[in-house]
Image (cartoon, rainbow, N blue to C red; front, side):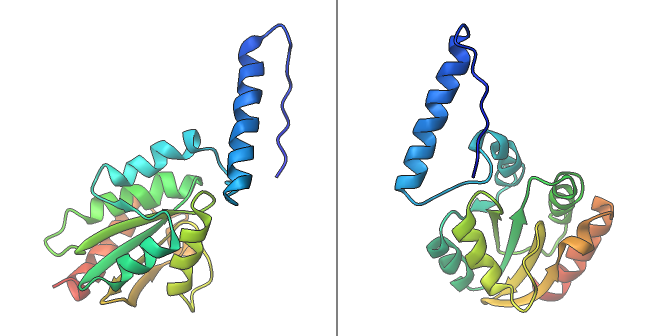
Length: 172
């Protein structure tokens, strides 16, 4: 991972940002966590889901525990891409205005919580990795999947209707 920082010594704010970035990179390297995106960028995108009741899964262990739960679990692989912002997250939110709903709402963030995302994708096999994507599990078994190609270019209302049909079938 490369960061290009242009620093003007007359501007102490830029120097402070460089020092903070170096500290962050040092901390991430010590913890063996390298993030593609800074938290400040993904935070509002995460909050689009956590604000409506989604549990953020940050580790492989939390993903495994979530998928062991009885009942239905929705897993949204969140992303910074435009189709996540314009289609997936709004579609998921609309889908929850349904009588039948998943028992558990969870999310991982591709490019940020890498290990958690990798674990979630492992449970989504045989589907290839896809961001964004939306998976519905029943008692730990994958029963419905929307991949990026089902989301990209489709209005949020279509995604919501697809999910509502899955909820009606599996979340009763």
